[in-house]
Length: 392
Ligand code: FEO
Image (cartoon, rainbow, N blue to C red; front, side, top):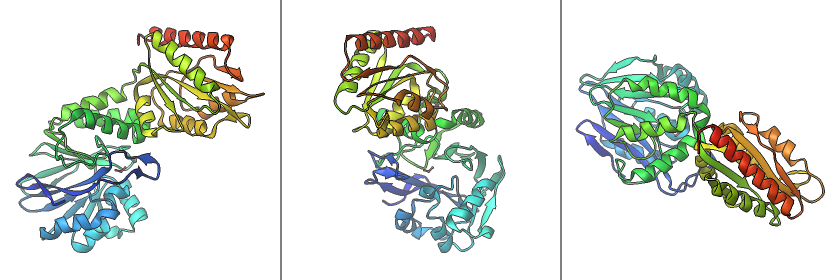
């Protein structure tokens, strides 16, 4: 892909990674991703904002072939998908300096062995004149590491936001054309890496809120030429108000837990609650993370394996615990053959979730009438809690 013109002096650069299917050896990328860099040419100085993943350094270097001079590389984030090609760009432009937050400077030295004298730490709110253009650096920690910042190009009212507002989406669209598709990809991205930092993100939104923004140019996915779309979406995701939603991740080995899950899903649906059911054997964890963004309640379903929950249930419970969604209630359902400590063990896995635990339902063998009655009671208890919180 060649560089693409945003206007006479600003270009999209970077690479589209159509075939990448996993990020951080953890996060599924069903739609690939892109690593966006941006070239801003002022009347006196030229700046490259971010670079690309090291696997795609050749793409960026070929785009830069016609750029005789780069004075600065702005590194918004030290993670390698944006910073990994910086050493190659510094090699090409011998006088260029990297601009980064003080925390980020240390990380670039640690992770990429960039010589200390090639990195300049900037201050929060510092401005850099490129001649006829002015860059303002705004520290926005935890989107997605503690060192992150964004850059506001004052004259053009463009916010270069790196991971913040980004979406893992491989597309030739320079700008968002299909908001529903980008909404899902951006929500997945938020859920997987930013959800634990909601309170800080609120501060970051407030910080950038006083600026007029014409374009949000992230470092993954297309550019937003209707910034209100993504900014308002973030405001909803980070709000502490959950929705009338139950997330039900489960495993079933011989059908007992599945029967209970199906019964509970039906009982909750009859009571006007939206349920997202996930069989963890086939679940894309990104979809599970998306569902957790707005849910008021999680019910974890597990059979008993060696006295405890199934290992995939351990994984899902741990994931929910570290993502810290705005859940208010939790419960556990499942089955056992002769004995179980699944409830205690799962409860011990989710200390970060500030939830009220509603009475678990565990049955011995295949569920019977009394177990279905208990599931009805659980559904009624969940509906009652959702009503108390004005969610229904
Ligand atoms: Fe796109 Fe946190 O890196």
